[in-house]
Picture (cartoon, one colour):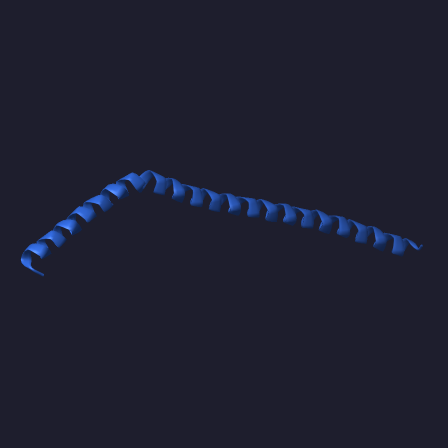
Length: 82
């Protein structure tokens, strides 16, 4: 093996090592990105269900009030003859 070939082989090896390090870094970054994205959506969905659970009693009170009002309007319509 000539000195030029050996030098070329060493440079190629160094470049391959550098590329390998860059690719590993990119893969690690992509995995962290996926983990953060999944965590983000789990938090958003969890907060949505939590908010619904928290607001549900108030919504039932509101639905009850609407039913009473609509029931009263039905009674008024009966009294008016409609």
